Length: 361
Image (cartoon, rainbow, N blue to C red; front, side, top):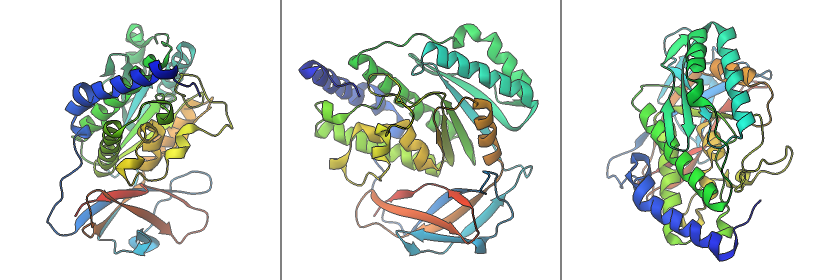
């Protein structure tokens, strides 16, 4: 992990986050203050649940009685239950982001070519796809929503001049800028998908943005408040808007210096998978894309040489899932974290959903 260059690195980090508070994220809807306390009754919590067998194939045909739902380790009643099956019209789409900002030149080019190959070979897609591009100027949509794989691939080839990756800048300040741009772009994408009803899947092709080590920066109460607020609101939006994030990359995770972690090495972002329950515990690591992906019920696949296979798996997951709702009682304080666990009394099945939620008084 690259460390800051003494006081210069720390000062730059402080200025950068301060600027983000007032110029960048603060104008984004997802980065506003957490929801105000409500005097209403119980809140209805919605969960999208993916169930797969030992081989990773979606498990269909389950009923309400197969599910046991725990809220903070206490059993709760499932208020509504819907099973979604392929072809029933309930699936919405897959939104693929090509990370041109945080991937190296060769990696981003390879991932783009593998996406084109997958689309060409797929023909008619089981799930309509729209492709986005992340650059140093933000995120933009490069293909229209379509279930015609070759048509989407052809559109990508015609915009090659736009999607050819630029070489990464290096240095601590450049890492901060990439984190800022990436996070702001991600919040805008999530906010935009909120206008689409139902279950959505985001496939992020890239290693994620730099994870800044707060211990190597002048990280004070103002920065903690920003990270706490942003982490809560993105987490809430992913669950409430039924968005699952899958991160897929040919390489490992991105460190603060933009270098790749070696396979098998403990990843910095894994230290932040435990719920953020207090503002005083907030760090920049809670804003890592990998953390949001796991929270959403998605997956993180690093070091894959077959992106087409991973994209196909994600598309398959998105055609068969279950939607459950339950009532959450009023919390004793704003943004109180409650763990959620979904159990199924079936052998050798894996359940993926959000690991909890922030409740209000």
